[in-house]
Amino acid sequence: MSRLLVRRPSPRLAEGELTHLERVPVDPALAQRQWEAYVDVYRSLGWDVIDIEPDDAHADGVFVEDTVVMFGDLALLTRPGADSRRGEIDTTRAALEKAGIGFAAIEAPGTLDGGDVLKVGRTVYVGQTLRTNPEGIRQMDALLAPRGWTVVPVEVTKVLHLKSGVTALPDGTVIGYPPLVDDPSIYPQFLAVPEEHGTAVVVLDEDTVLMSSDAPQSAQLFRDRGLTVIETPISEFEKLEGCVTCLSVRVRD
Ligand code: CIR
Image 1 (tube, rainbow, N blue to C red):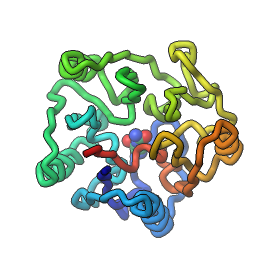
Image 2 (image 1 turned 30 degrees about the horizontal axis):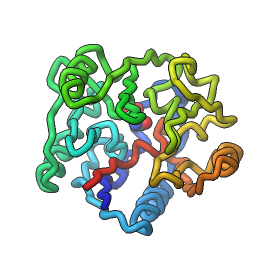
Image 3 (image 1 turned 90 degrees about the horizontal axis):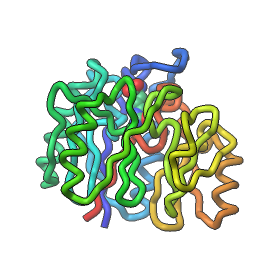
Image 4 (image 1 turned 135 degrees about the vertical axis):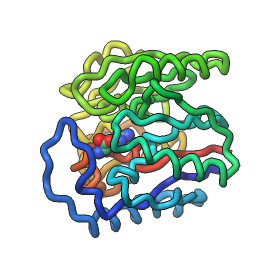
């Protein structure tokens, strides 16, 4: 069984952090509807949805992936790199405690955003970004190496987070839109996708991925590889440099 951690969008979503994109109008009502449809995809698959307490003061709080990363049954509570986002972890921590999920935490002066963490098998690629610092990576490595994970730091300069540029298909093939990937050659298997919003997939099972509906050619590319692709509109979150991965965290039981 799988559980899914999510948090409803703040009405202040439009005030969220922006690093590489220009600010454009965001429709909070549409964002709410898109978020509900996104969560409904998982509900329709029978996943249990755990709502982290709403935290409307934090404009970016909907992007829960940045506050917690799962490594097997261990959760890693992060310490987000943006000052405006640091307070989000209080309610994430409370949700982990309430759900009985054991966790470790990144401590100051380390910073880590979950969006910088890409797991492929037992390899953990971690972006070195404005949000994730070397001390955060060092703490993560110290925690994970004894548990059999290999942490691989990755330079990221073209996008906000590592996973804004690359994610992975169920077979471990790393996918990315080349203009936004610093060095595709570090990945043993890399597949270029033709659209910016085609870079982000959530693996639902060995044959199924969830992705933005704003990348139809990439969706077709994945279907041609034999995958079932579920597309969902997330335009209001993409305006804030978010993607399908960052709106939830999967907890495997
Ligand atoms: C931020 O800049 O932190 C938010 N506006 C977007 C975070 C997106 N998170 C993610 O891709 N993991």
